[in-house]
Image 1: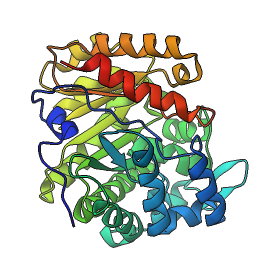
Image 2: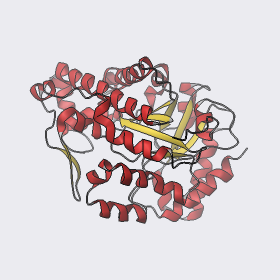
Image 3: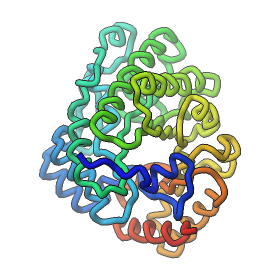
Image 4: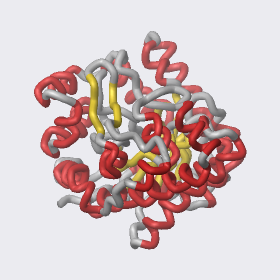
Length: 350
């Protein structure tokens, strides 16, 4: 199994070392905007089949690397595999997205959840193992999981959403049950990331995509502390890989995430990079934060937006990683990604 060169650009950025340019990868870079992905998805028959086949998931992981000069691959998987391993029974409805057939909607259901260990995530581990030998030595491989609060939102609601009112109600009305759900989910997330680390991931990432749904006085308890516990469990297990935490639209907790052990903070497009840098200091890498909608604009508008983002990252600050402020949209023209890759290399070169 070929390991990533420790001097790979992304790994240097995460160690806050000198960079000749900004490393670049894109959230959801393996996905529906690529025609080859849509063909693979059709061949698989369903999204779950694609996720559950290490061979096909490896192909999906590598597809963007075969088109673009990216500095990292992120394993093709889904954050809800943790919910599935806990016993919520993940499914996907065509045209509607993921759902959980057994949501953890009350104290009784939460008490009945499974306690998955590392072996429960053998599928995503196998995908990482398959990818590891296919990547160039200067390309880092990122493993990931949903963070506990985001997963709890899905697990209570039973499906996706924008406000997750059922989850927020449980948090308010049954705080002990919600705390138990967060605790169980935290341990499962740590197991999922441990499996990916053992399989050959170079970097681990926590997606706290719905952090902003927690009212400010709940952020410490249900967003920061669970992420800190995940990181602590990984370190206790001897896993010293760099960890990126993405608290989307809740960047006010960035400094606390760094104190909890995060090596880098993913920054959403609605946040100010300069302000986040001031909060975390010079020794922490920042990743982000181009608005994904810029990829739907004309070439010159896109290049201007990229130039602004590179400038906001600065040159004398800590580690700098170019990415979007959320996942790439399915409507994106693949040629726009090519423009982005070339522009980042051009504008960020020292």
